[in-house]
Amino acid sequence: MSCSDDQIPANDALDSLDDAVAAAAFRRLVRLLQHRSDAANIDLMGLAGFCRNCLGDWIAEAGDLEKEAGRAIVHGMPTAEWKALHHTAATAEQLKRMEESMAKNP
Image 1 (cartoon, rainbow, N blue to C red):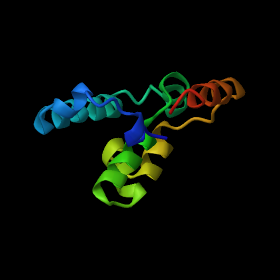
Image 2: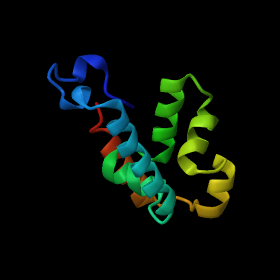
Image 3: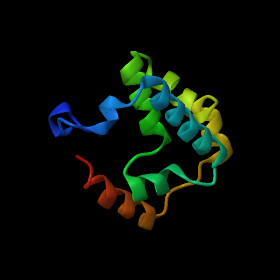
């Protein structure tokens, strides 16, 4: 889930950011997430309401790409390969926390 245009304040400072600066910050975030495979997607969802897959989906949407292509960019490899290396089954507690967190998203 993402913010719609009607939920963004008219004077949002992000809109005044140079695209190159925004892109550099985004790449740094993605590289950190690639490095921190110990930060599980389910935990990111539970804490922040988004995860690597969300970022990949946003890339795909913005760039008119297939979801898998966007997710592979964020994972640094095909999603199936990333899951095989890093994915663990979510606990009931993690799922509950994710649902509560997602409910806070606009």
